Every structure is written in structure tokens, then in C-alpha cells.
Image 1 (cartoon, rainbow, N blue to C red):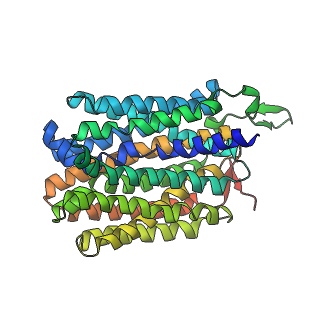
Image 2 (spheres, rainbow, N blue to C red):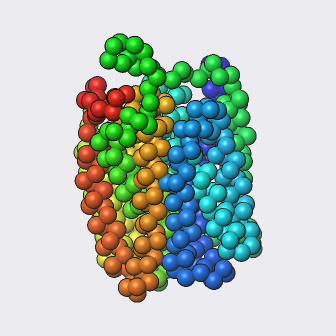
Image 3 (cartoon, one colour):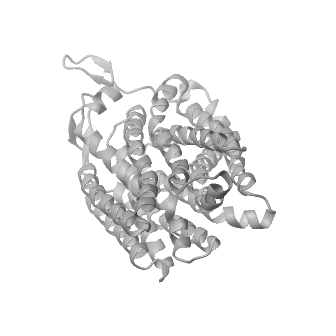
Length: 409
């Protein structure tokens, strides 16, 4: 591969990863303003994020089928273009456009989420750990930038939440343009689907979905993916509101959300590299869960006392959990097609579960009148996340017949 083509690949990959979260994270600091402008209750406000996260679950299944027909690279391009459209529709006038745009953007992110582990396996098969670090770090940096910039941009430009939130379409379109050379490269450049011998020794095409759905490992990976996403999206949707209710100004609340997203980079940039060299990721899963619970407890017990410390601890725990969930997906399947299929199963079911988080927390807040009960519920979810993560992190490889076998060192 030429140096120019390599540079385009690396730049396009990173910029695509940067677009995986701003459309979600950038809405949270504006949520109070959106609810006031559109006339939404707290539960309806939480439902904006719920719609997007629910689409991450419902439409991730599209990715393996699109990839089979058009290739992973063109599938990623389609996701970037749909994201651009969804962000613009979401900023249009009225509640229907708000929810429709959220659904389109969520669908786009679903396709991109599922495609990215397969893209890593396809383009960087010998460096899965380091490139998982790169893309997950870019993902959380995008989330941090989206959370930090919305309120300052409003004040700097004098625009409202609609115009400012629509700016997320700009990097999405830029990433699509940068990814064009990969999307339209010759099909022969892509690896052929993996074949496996049957019981008589004849080569047969692997059926990733059929095999994956029979494997217990698949469902532990899926549960871990879903629960770490649920505990993440609870905070993504409601942290600024929690801090504002505790007496902090809106811009400081947005900065604190940005801080916890930026703190994740310390974990996402290092944990996959270190954990990827180990047969088992169980110790990493336990450590990440302990940090996440500590962050939740700090926000519950003393939200205005050293809130920056709680955000750093929470960010390290959530960043490590996300990185481990995505790394585990790439390590439990043998080839890009199987990784994409496992990614679709884990992220589709997982995000349907995660979508309940912001909505349920909004309802608990509405019924209880405070944040104690909602945050205790989040801590309980973290405990279950730890159990499923320990099972998913065991060194197992899903074989073409659906059996889980010990992974090679």
C-alpha cells in the first residue's frame, strides 16, 4: 500500500471514529433548553437520547447484510452520509423532526458502530489492540468535544440549540469525503470470506449469525456490551441536569460532562493495548467496574464536592469498559465477517438494553423527585455489568459451528 493511500486510510478511519458520538453527546448540555423550547417533560426529554440509543440496537443488524453486498468500507460511508442527514433533520422545527432526526442519526451510528470492529479486523488484522485503542479513543474524544462545545458555541455565535446542534453535520460530511477512496477501491482488495472444513473435510462457507446465536459466549459478550452502554448513557443523558439541579451553572455542567468523556481517553488509549496482549481480560473488567461504581457514588454523595475528581474516576471506568467491550468483540471471532456479525449481535441486543437507561432514569427522577433512587439504580446496573463482563472476558473463541473453544495465546 502506498504512503498516500495509507495516510488517507488512517485519516479517514480516525475521522469516522470521531463522528461516532458527537451527535449523541452534544445534545445533553442543551437538554434543558430543548425541553423548554419544544415543551417536553423530563421523561420525554430523556426519550430523545433513548430514541437514538434504541436505534443503535434495532438497526445494527443492517450492517452485516450491507457489508455482504457492498463491502465494509461502503457500508461505513453510507453510515456517515445518513448521519449528516439525520443531524440536519433533527435541528428542524417541531417535535416530530426532533425525534425523526434523532432516529436517523441513531440508525447511522448503529451502522457505523457495528462496522468499525470489522474494519479494524479487515485493515489492521495484526494490530487489533492498538487500532482498537485508536478508534475508541477517537470515539470518546468526539463525545468530549460534542459535550464541551455546544453551550460555548451558543454564546459565541448567538444561535439557538437548533443551529448549534446542526454543526455536527460538518465533521460527518468531511469524514464521508475522506473515506471515499476506501469505499471505491477495487473489490479484489478486500479479503475473501473465511471458509471452514465440515465433518467430512470439505470446505464450507461459515455462517456467522447461525453459529454466533448458538454460542453462550455471544450472549455474555452481548450482555456486557449492553450493560456498560446502559450505565454510560445514563450519565451521558443526565449528568449535566444532575449537576445543574445540585446548583452548578449550565456551562460548568457541560464542562464536567466533557471532562468525564476526555478522561476516558486515558483508559481507551492504553487498556486495549495492554488487555489485548493477555489471554484473559477478567482483571481489566473488574478494575473498570470498580472505577465506574466509584464515580457513580461520588456523584450521588457529593456532586458539588470535587466534581472534577468524580468525573475523572467515572471517565476512566467507563472508558475502560467500552474499550474492553469492543476489544472482546474482535477477539472472540476469527475473521472480519464473523467479527462484524458478532458486533451486530452484541451491539444490537446490547443497545436495545442500553436504550432503557435514560428513559428509566428520567421516570425514576420524575416519580422520586430527586436523584438518589435513579443513581442507586445505576449502581445496581454496574454490579450486574461486572458479572457479565467477567464471563465475556474469559479467553474463548467462537468456532464456525457455534462452539466456544479456548483462545490461542
